[in-house]
Length: 319
Image (cartoon, rainbow, N blue to C red; front, side, top):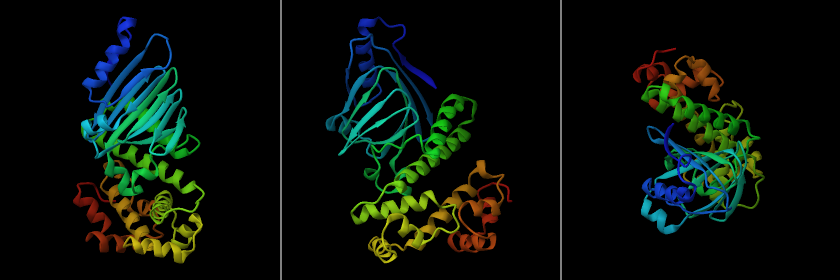
């Protein structure tokens, strides 16, 4: 990653002031204050992978606030951030949620008024991406923003490890490959958020939140060929009739949504050079299809091409 700023060689008395000037230059809408009297130390590194921006921040104990006016000036409503805590503790307050992240945890941060505090020796890796990248699979970010996705989830640990390695090795990749790797990493983030949301014990919730929980459960279990509406209803603790009514109010059917997501994920993998070595049959099984014949028929009905033809059409060798 490219080093943008370091306090290492700066006079101690001017370090924090220079840090604030750098934040202003980088259009980072934060008002900050130090939480102790120790000499301030900080470092900022950055890398860009197509639509994805990675920023690694090493800093001492700080209180950072993104105010409404600062966010309006930035004008980044179409973006969202994901933070991995690599060392220390990070605390995030956003909307009506206040959570803490320890080493290995991740958190989604909307571009909304936010208060964040960091502990001594804190290091975090932040990913800025198009908001639609998460919301197309998981629904409105307000349902999972500032929610701790803990390192006890294997998917969260895998996502963090992937991006730590990508931040270390991205300069060895050609630009197109780096972009693809970033996209694969975001898929891991989506899977970890979906798993975390699906684990929550459902309380009396609004209809829209229940639908998003249902979709999160689907996303986390797409590879299970037995996934069906009754299983989703049981996971949410609602009746099948209730689940179907909820989806109908959104103009959807539960079973149609499951097949739609399976086919969309399959199409993404067929078009991904990183998956070119995977046979169509294996890929179909990974998306929850019990047979290649069934997969091929549904795929052709949806996209107008058989899976192998689709793979050829996007320039990959057929399997």
